[in-house]
Image (cartoon, rainbow, N blue to C red):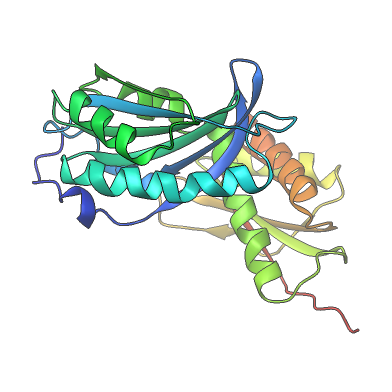
Length: 261
């Protein structure tokens, strides 16, 4: 449990991001505030609350389609604004199976008040449901909503790809991509470099030592596509190889390539 006094719900920093996954064997999109990852659970907010809103046009994937999905954002904002006055922390949103589900944590005995909020805000033609349960350890947040290691890496890769496009890169040109990995033993780094060389990567000399616990750094590069699916597949292959040899994959970087047209 955190010993610091938590901020009020309206003071929590906005560190939202999203990822795609499967929930109940169906496509899902989860958006969550990652600020809580290093600060939860909070003893004063040991009850999980949820508000499920019907998607009138769920689309082929069940995650919402067209104008109807756009109507849910202002509904979410209105519900959350009033939920915060009840001491509830908005932690996540799940879109799946034709539902737009909001998740909050807060003190106990707020379900009836949240139900009244939803009844006031949600139009009568859209079905909704409110519920709660005790969750002192924030198991729903950490074990259900938080991404696994592969999905977290997808988020990091997507952020870098979006940074390229924000700088005008159309992503159409393959280019040199540099990767880093760190190892606790020199023989682990050597084995990793041998393995990636067979995949067409080149090592960047000299091999560098750092002062961290994993002291042996490997820097490699290869010309690759930086389309999100392509670069993510490359990164995951390198992560697996690094872990097989006692190392940690530490990230990638590349240049911005703008169109000449």
